[in-house]
Length: 447
Image 1 (tube, rainbow, N blue to C red):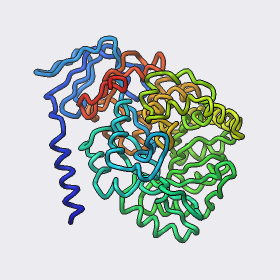
Image 2: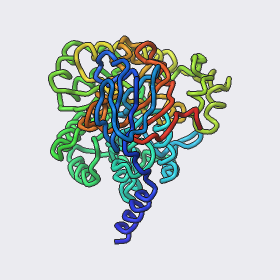
Image 3: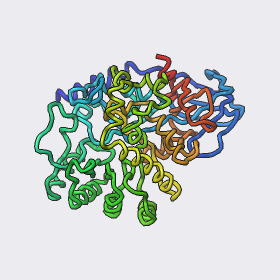
Image 4: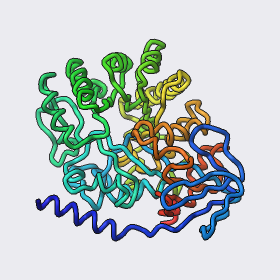
């Protein structure tokens, strides 16, 4: 009863803080990228009524509409990130104790400033998000920031002991396949967006999950009509998991180039691929002084102290001299080749970054870097944008209302001062972010 009253009070306070919708908003004369991969529409208008796109076309009019001339500007759908972590990052570290309402909303606002309208956390949520109604309020649009899609508590291998304040302490860690069923029953009660499992030996430093347990996780997820997503690294594991019914590959295959048999199986079974290329580049790139290291768009995304950390000589030398440095570079290059092969095979590529899992995987900027890396891999800018909008919406199962700009869709969009079809880095030139038809941000550099 107390918990129910608390949720009611939270929702009531959120409703009181909601903006009053303008009667109508008319954006005029824009270049429109709709997220479907089509050639951008020039000199095009978008009519927004309340939270919905009412029309897209030329010469639109509406009595009493608030009109904004966007000549020379580009409008595209807001980004959707299908693999992130929210709430545990603060300053230069991650910890379970960081997972507070204040920190969660602060990070959702940051994603929104960077033009991200929806995020999917992958398996490291904590009870607060469910017990106080934060997840549900966020999805209902009652909280500021990007909408929070939660996977609940993921599945990993048993640990003999855990560090203090460990942010992955609530994962299910079945020792046998038989233990998975009751754990999945418990997870299903919080209605996760997907079921996450970790299938990796982390360079030989950990024991990999038993294949029988992997199969049990997939089967038990499907029994509850839930999709299974896997953190993986190796081509061999991808083969086994896809054969076992896996729905989403949540990281790149990085040890070998994908073969035709896997491509055929992924295509036949509709497996979604989330490459998280930025994660792989972040593993080594700070040792190389990347061209964006002093960019204000990057610096604005960082937690306090992180810029000083990643630009220090000690940190850069530590990365450069790490035993895994060459392996990390090779893994990134393999990931680039694989995402192009997978895309060309007609398999759905969805944007995700693993941002928020560590201080160097910075929230907001990572999503724009991911777009650049998809283009570096060989996708066109429009194909990369489709991965970050239409395809990511499909990964979150929200395509009916989100992911593209079309009549009847929710008016989540970004206004840019330059066209990203010409240069994908132009997605960083944000001058306005709209959420459900309301101007909610002028970008991260306006703060």
